[in-house]
Image (cartoon, rainbow, N blue to C red):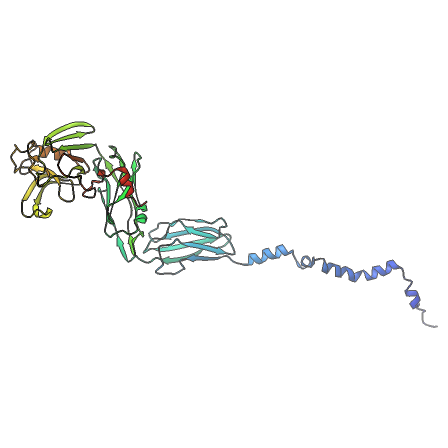
Length: 412
């Protein structure tokens, strides 16, 4: 037997294969090629380009940066603290000083940068805790340097005190202030009931505040000092950060007419007393104008040498002395002059004198009565003295400036 017959098509027969069968055979390879060119090979390997990008971003961890840098020992305190994040956003930032006080701040719109609302304080260690979205909190610390030289402001009146309606808020600085606007901006005085209060510079070490007219009786005044780390002059920084309050009592205004040699005392608009007085003589005239009682002494020593008058007098126990000017003008009791002087002659060295008794204990005399009815901040007005108006800086006497001139002395 011969082998089974196997039919081998001839070349001519192969050319006569059905066209459909040819396409079916050839279609295997083009299908794969088309798939590769369609851009869907990423799907075949496990995802789309967007999914791949998301996975890549998720693989990056947020990086937090803090200025001042972690571990800084003598960081500056004249710029805000800044926290930034890359490859993420910030969920929260907390900055706390070693005294427990927070340093607040705010995020930008993209939540990639946090900036403190004020500068850090000098000489303080801060802990920064920054938490990126979806990641663990990161903590850093830094310590700010201490300032070189410092200054403070000593204020009048005393905290918690009650004063007369003429009492300004007066601040004397321990160093000359070059940056007046910065310092004045850090000092505010507010009143209840509310009234406009404006600061006025007397030289480079004194800043006073007052309203346009005398304070209303019963006013509560708040002085806010935010001087810590404010640069008053080159390299000299403030240290105070505090609020203090004062109160205004009743309105007592005494008017001294040295032509009639009489003092009229009014309280809340009503006359409560009239006293005969003696003012400065022709060689030692008394300052005229509005003056405010700034110090009170039941008894004090007065020496002419301290006011440039040589050895003309030295009285160790002047009774009921109330200071009106820094230069040495007082309204005080006088026991050494004849009672006939008061109301008739001006014989003093520039002070306003009332009849009084040695020892300052006689309640029946004018000097005692005026002293007993007075308080710091009461107003004493002197007229017809033959002398010019007192310098507003000579004592607490800024009321002698018009409101326009007062405001012109502000640095803001």
